[in-house]
Length: 82
Image 1: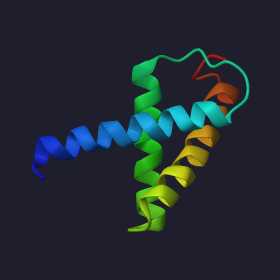
Image 2 (image 1 turned 180 degrees about the vertical axis):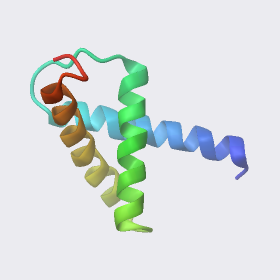
Image 3 (image 1 turned 60 degrees about the vertical axis):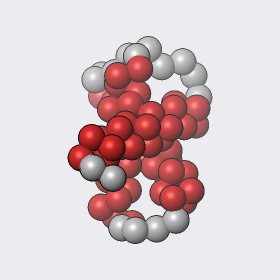
Image 4 (image 1 turned 120 degrees about the vertical axis):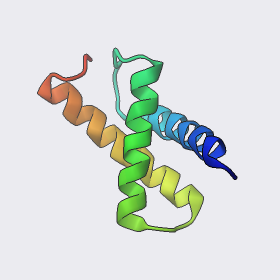
């Protein structure tokens, strides 16, 4: 897979992880698609650094938990709207 394929794959995984994080956190979050994907990409990057090469399903689930935590922190600190 080339460079463009890696970027597209990262965005797809980021979208999945971001939406999973939003689903885990109760209540409505007032963030758009770009922030959701960005949150997911950042979470997937953090999980990749911490866990390294693990099962993809485990990485997505842990990434969703990290995304929910980052979303909660962003709302609590006032960076994101609830």
